[in-house]
Length: 280
Image (cartoon, rainbow, N blue to C red; front, side, top):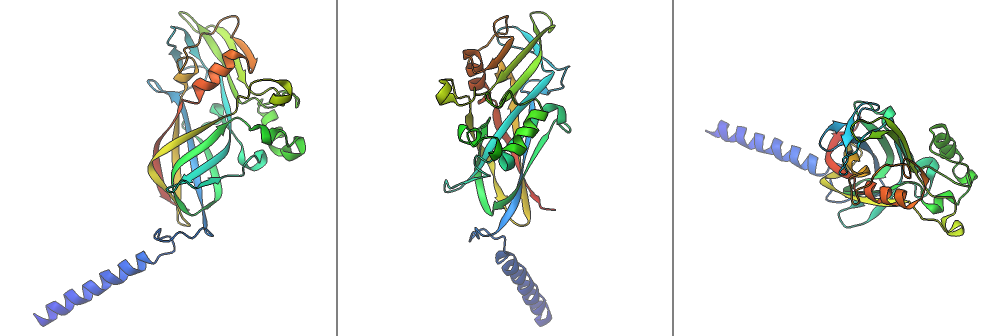
């Protein structure tokens, strides 16, 4: 019996030692060390909520107004990615610094229908929300070419700019549409027309805030992956049901049709799930 008690006591001590070791681990969130950083990943998946992933030149959808349409090009810019913790504090990833903090989500470059955005040197914390801009903020654009040369050149190579005076294409949607079959080409490109105050034009930059269903825990050992779904049904069947016709099939800039389209697209995002993966 004495030997058995010794075994129980030894086992208990081992368990307590392991527990104490874990509880004092550098990644324990009982005390947050803001000086420590980690990494996080955003995974964008474009699709139609009722059809699944989008295959360019193939997947055909029917709008609320009965139009058939597909995408041959599907691209948009995101920037000013912001992580919000449990107490509402915000960490903005390279605010208004397009060279370091803006990304092009291009369906053509998707891997298994996922476009990956990797963010480095994120403060250790528990994050409950993610926010990002659709497009480029005016303050970033007004820094001039020298303030964003790297991203401007990248965007230009990817067909996401007009002239410098006009600025960036925020969202580029192209494809075919029709009543019974999708056969007529369309191009809808949204964006600001340069300096929106000086030019007295609409500002189409929008910010989207999404709740996370599970806390994203950034530590030196955990790299969360936030899986964001984009439901492109919102293109024509969103807050406002839109129709492609001779006046809207070739729309560029910030017309009322493109303002409505932009407002629709801000509702297309949701976080499907979060994986708190072990960092490599």
